Amino acid sequence: MKPAPFAYAKARSLEHAIALLDGMSEAKILAGGQSLVPTLNMRLSAPPLLVDINGLHELGRVVRRNGQIELGALVRHASAEQNSELARLAPLLAQAIPHIAHPAIRNRGTIGGSIALADPAAELPACLLALDGEVEISGRSGTRTVAAENFFRGLFETALAAGDVLTAIRVPIARPGDRFGFAELARRHGDYALVGLAAAARAQGDGSHAIRLAYFGVGATPIRARNAETALADGNIEAAAAALARDLDPQPDVHASTATKRHLAGVLLRRVSKQLSAPA
Image (cartoon, rainbow, N blue to C red; front, top):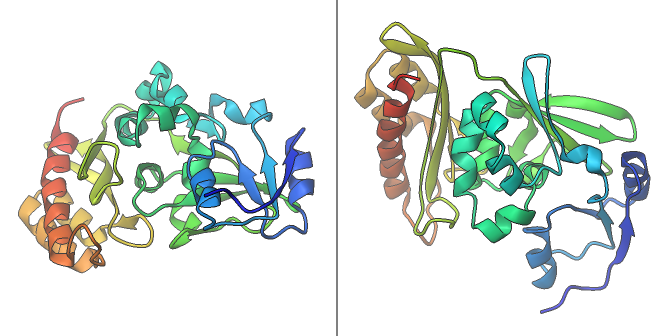
């Protein structure tokens, strides 16, 4: 199929992009287009206007500032995957990115596009939640910052309003003693995960504290498994796995039942807990 007719405009600046979007509530932003273009071609989406932001090179930078690492919205997955400084400063992102789809998609797909789409089975939204990251948004009223835990609001629903442009994400720079873990289970590598888990913690003696377990593929948004976090901080992996029954209520789909997804969530918890306890 071919997309429905639409107007196209190439933004000359961030301010120009916001002006183009003003009053066009159904307009879409074109960045990598790896999710948008298929929905256009299948006519699942029929925006009156596409605003192309690929010329906004300032949104394609990775920088350090104020104890955080900032990734501009137009940073390509492949670029982030190959960035040795990012691997050192944000190891969880480096662990997760190779699991995103396939190389051809990572070559065009963008960090900002993945976060803005907020697919509940995607890796990066869960990583952002696990890292207690934040999202920078620009719009008619200026620029604001939204914490990850407040950004994802429902199925493909975020804190982005009509006319907003997601400009960057920021995560804390990893410190000595920080531990990270990532694992997912998919039918084939590159497919969306049946269940996935992104995790962060700080070493404390022989154990860990400040544990953050962010599951994906088990709800409408990435989900913190808070009861499991508490049990895992006490060093009881089996109690943590049992606590997932209170944390997660995954809906069945064509690939797996609720019981299967809960079982897989426990499998991943045991795998990731070993990563969190491994020496740096």
